[in-house]
Length: 215
Ligand code: CO
Image 1: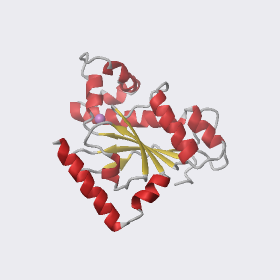
Image 2: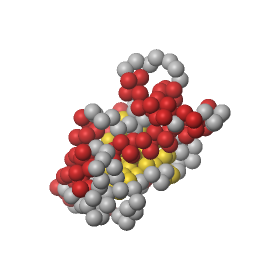
Image 3: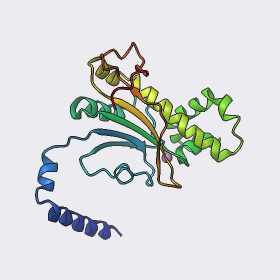
């Protein structure tokens, strides 16, 4: 019931004020999140809840299957604001096992506009077909594709002019690929981090992957 949501909200706001009378006054004046989260729209993967972050602590962009389309003005606007104005130090691309978007990309059926949105997943599947074809269990293969797609989105983000120019200016900024398990509620780091070099040289189109100094 919608009225339940509104009642819950009143109880939550009252509780916050009891804990800290300046809570909303402080939050409304400033947000200074350290993280940008790019995740799947799936209702079971809410960024703040699974990471234990409070309001004000994570800037969030979500879309179906956590994809980074080069021409997505929504994502690029979020990215630019997060990097240039908020000054986040970490970007987390978080996908999840059992992603319906990844499954829909590969099931061979026509779903509508979403098929165009999901094209990058099929591109990753084509690029990595030799590995994926060795996995005979469908669920396991799709879960591996979830991981590969996350890694591809991290690499794609690293190549955007927004990130490249931030690194060239010497900004400490890392991009991480994580995957979430719906079955166990756990996040796993896929170890595909991209970081700008602390010397300020991000390279001509590629992140300095060897630089691991800015956690
Ligand atoms: Co999903």
